[in-house]
Amino acid sequence: NMDEFAYGFSTENAHSGTPRNPHDPARLAGGSSGGSAASVAAGMLPFTLGSDTNGSIRVPSSLCGVWGLKPTYGQMPLKGVYPFVASLDVVGPMASTVEDLQAVYSIMAGAPPLALPDVGDVRVARLGGWFASNISPELTAGIDAVMAHLGRDRVIELPEVARARASAFLISAAEGGNLHLPRLRRRAMQYDPATRGRLMAGAMLPAATFVQAQRFRRWFREQVHAALAQADVFIAPATVGVAPRIDQPTITLDGKTVSARANLGIFTQPISLTGLPVLAAPLAGDGLPLGIQLIGRPGGEDRLFAVAAELQRAGLARCQPLDAGYARKDSGC
Image (cartoon, rainbow, N blue to C red):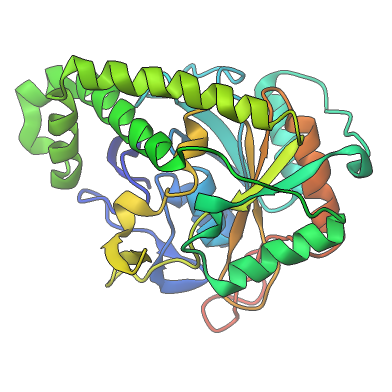
């Protein structure tokens, strides 16, 4: 199950319902590929596939405590994948171990297994500013522990991240609305109401707005590529904290209560604008799952897997086992 046409971050679907998070059935699984992440977390499958336009692999992977990969834009074939935003869409795997994630990635890419570099040779930095605000203390502590283990202390702040997120919103709305406009004209009332309204609004966006968003996108991508001269891998939160409750699908940003469906991608959306590869890593812990993003340069998946493998080896990141109170003891990771 997923958000209708991949337009959402919570897998709330008016037609087929809302998947429950295997770690706590009262909570969301994230989205849009929430069913895929929940299936791995529940032990139903060793790996699944998802699509990622603005965070649809990374958000549910984080909330369900599994590994996920958004490959470099344009690297994976999209044959058989229904589009949402052609200039952002990618498809990638979710899995219960780094080894499985890498194996499925290689098969999907039609390439031999990656030769991973020595993690000691990979330059790692954490993202500050936008990516250090609004996150839970537990998530901050988890990133601190990762950086300490890797022996890195560099912090990099990207410019105009809020505008990058806004641009991703506008581009998604415009391209998605344009794609669905012919069908909306014929069968609008068959859409999920939450999806229908956003697609119709996107279809009515002025062309000048879309052009300005694309111009900013080009500038922002140049800034991020310049920052990547200082590091091979950026570390950032994947979401603000643990999965929200289904009966209260909200999160708090800057002291305000906002919709989870629209805002769970606050940290994934700006990165999507650049087309960079991102590996979602589940932090080890005893509570509900938390996740981070390992962000690399185009074609830099080998460095992402090297860092992920080291975090798994050190016990700092792993597919989160299920609490026996919520599911069978032999299920999950």
